[in-house]
Amino acid sequence: MKWDRELSPFLRILFFYSCTIEITSAAFLRCYKGTLEDYLVTPLDKPLPPTFLSCLDSNLPIMIYTFGYGGRVAGPATTAVLSAYIATRKRNVLLMDWEEEAKSGILGIALGYAFSVVPKSKKIGKEMGERLIDIVDAGYNMTHVHLVGHSLGAHVMGFAGRRSRESGHVVPRITGLDPARALFEGTFAVLRGLDRTCAKFVDIIHTDPRGYGTSVSTGTVDIWPNYSPGGTQPGCSTGSHSMFTPEDTDFEHRTHNITDILKVTNVKYLKEILRHVLRKPNLCSHDRSWRYYVEAIAAPTTILAAGAPDYKTWATNYGKTNLTIYLGELTSTNAEGNFYFSTNSESPFSRGREGLKPSRTKPKVTGTGIFI
Image 1 (cartoon, rainbow, N blue to C red):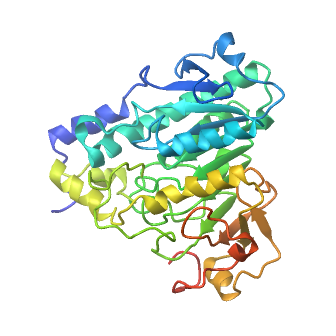
Image 2 (image 1 turned 120 degrees about the horizontal axis):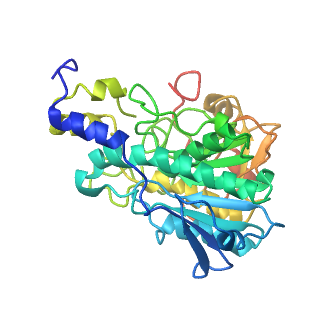
């Protein structure tokens, strides 16, 4: 089927509808008061009321987390990240809850992502940016704000950072945990997601490049655990199901330029396109981003990463480097470039300083750069 056919009336209506979706009251901001069970909540599309702002301790930095496509407030990633931060008692811990908006809905997994959730993610991210402005206007110091997002949630936080920057308030740090690849990277990208322009410092942890996660260095710092072209994280199988299918369950997350998508004449063919460019199954590697990050929050000096211009240099030098950083809250905001480390196949993932070296089973190195 050729790309130059006219868009069917159904897809035309569907696409334009997706571009005009309004945020509903199903997105919220939570502030936790020491436990996951004790929190204040307020709608994301309304200015923050004084009662909600009273939850914030002005003496502590603010960490705001959000999940990605199909994510849940009670899901394993959300629970683990929030619990790790709450346990430190060194941060105001907030959650941007968009669980209802992040669902695929009646369109199904692939189409729901493309025509419903991704368009809403940008709008919700901008609303999150408005709430950051509220926090600053209430007297809190923006220099103490840290946004963290997993998968599509990483791009949501990127949108929030851009909106805040437009108002003159630059977010100091955004951490992207394997930012979603579909519709944000490659020939089929339709949106500009999280990158180094979204905050003063952007660190990105890539655990499923060319799969559910992005495969290009776009942050101030890009960290590549167990990197190998097209490989999986230690302890993760390659899977046997197509991405964005019900069999690849609990998904959170390449596609065509939007002008190309508009030329598709039927839904079945669009699904084929989406699945053709989303070949790599299994969420295990995608989820390792938050698992490594949680371990680093709980034990801040255990996971080290080695600086190198690209993977081939790191592998060839067998991890020898004069530049190292910690994963997590202790990541140096003065660092720039690509960093690599290897892990164990199960928790605890840290290999200490041995993790600065590639694993004993060295993946094949091809090309001259990180990505070929």
